[in-house]
Length: 345
Ligand SMILES: Cc1cc2nc3c(=O)[nH]c(=O)nc-3n(C[C@H](O)[C@H](O)[C@H](O)COP(=O)(O)OP(=O)(O)OC[C@H]3O[C@@H](n4cnc5c(N)ncnc54)[C@H](O)[C@@H]3O)c2cc1C
Image (cartoon, rainbow, N blue to C red):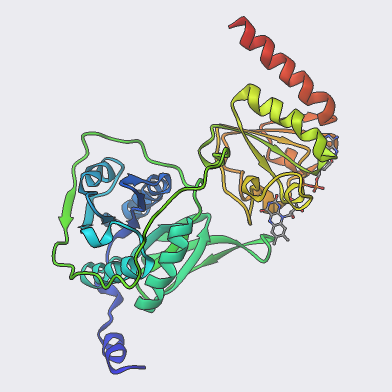
């Protein structure tokens, strides 16, 4: 251990760390949806701990977003608004975050389990020599011991494990998008905006020359209605029926890994442990058995409608409405009915 780290270990006192922080991921000045979900769970945890909820906002020309974070539940927003941070570079963002943590000492620090969050959080955790639980699906606290209980699927999702980080601070976790509920926005909420103008210039070891988003028709995570398809589809040619149903409902198309592995649809559509997490208002599962690895990606949906020819299929244990039947017969009937209703209105 280096002299500096030894000194750090000796002066570390976990009692010095207070409050819950969330990382306010933003892209081109727009706060990511997952941040509002983190603020939702963060607010609950902070209230249980009787401590404050902070949000860390880093970027350039982003200060105006701080008030929005307060309206969604933050008490304090730590802003680093500098030109060097205009583009996300994990090494530089990690450096800024480490400085903020060393200065303000949060007890809990949450990131979205997004591509950005998954690359940033481990760097921060390793620099701070603390623990990080990736991909949490549930978070609780023990208010007596002030310990964060971080739950996630493990061992191929056959079991859920709860992990605690007793001796190091902050207790860090990434949280799956679409799992936690957002809080309601309250325009009248007041909080503190703490500007951190003293952060020294960043090293900027790399330079982003251009950034372009890949065009995709699938907006699964944002969709209010998802029509998802499983191996029960039988063959790729039958996918046109699912597309027709999705088109009639204005829905996005999801799929199980079985369907992706069969090459019937691209990985972008996969929902579940190794795919995306969704929580739409309506989720229609067509020919899906309900394996735990699929369920972890969609079980927070408000209404689940399952179509399966096997009345014993596990998906029915999670379904709000179940239709036992051949999807090749049921889906055309649904399309016909939806079209009739649309024509009437
Ligand atoms: C480490 C790991 C990670 C994984 N990650 C994921 C993941 O991210 N997402 C995921 O989905 N899976 C994942 N899996 C795979 C998962 O375990 C299941 O194998 C998969 O979800 C099953 O897909 P399915 O429901 O389409 O197929 P099946 O389990 O084969 O189910 C097909 C269902 O269709 C029904 N059916 C058949 N014909 C019809 C018909 N004509 N009409 C109506 N119903 C019909 C059957 O009764 C059956 O219930 C993972 C597995 C592992 C080990």
